[in-house]
Length: 310
Image 1 (cartoon, rainbow, N blue to C red):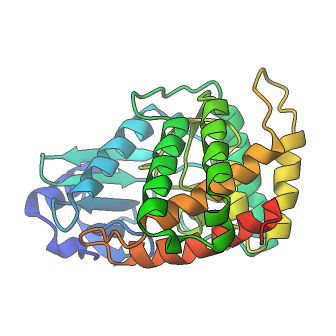
Image 2 (cartoon, rainbow, N blue to C red):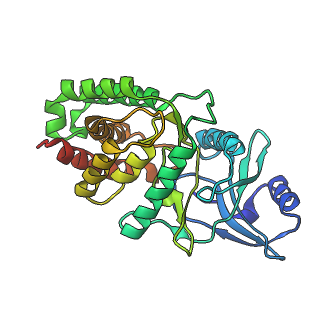
Image 3 (cartoon, one colour):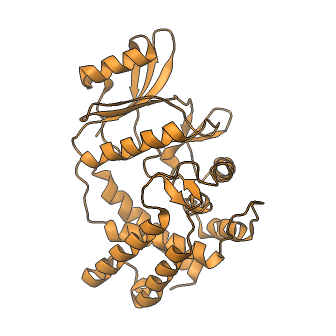
């Protein structure tokens, strides 16, 4: 549910003017993503540009907390060519907003080999840059998230196993054991984006990618973002090849290696978590439930292929 910039609170528009130094001449509302509120590319009379994302308490109060988290993270992240820099932030206790560097370009297409390879190189470079974790905010790490996903999956299996394919239900005990093992094996040595989706990656006209939207970021293993990019690819074959590469990769740093079966389990855990949270509408964000259903079905099929399940 997008809000036009002209409909924003006067105090918020005044803040934008103060930061940019002049009035906004053009505000282009952007589609994509799930956050409610304002998402606009702004341009002033002199040609200065910025991207504004802002949200109030309605229709979903949790979005404001994600924005506050993103503000904290962007303040601490160093500048990098594959990230959009924070220009300024706003928080009056009701509205929360970020002005970030406007990146000219288009959304990434993970089905395009050129886009996919470019994003993978950027994600790999960022994972190396952000190890050891320079942010270290006190938020649950990815291992804690996997434990939470596992608990949610177990609860839904008890209540309505139709959320999952028959092979998953039949292997319930083994699947839950895999999730627990994965969580215990995960280190938290890297600050990870954890939301590497096509609508969170912009591709400049020269083909270089930029990751945006750090609201889900946290500490986790260095391979997590690259694994998420892999399972966003269109075929299980490409996922398998990337997982083989990750399991064999020696980053040349004192980082823990990753077992191939743990990567397969990670793909399974992401798909299963989406399946467990489906049919839980989020107020004001009607597209999320449909996304969860579609991605859960796709990722569980990919994970089943990786695991040889039928």
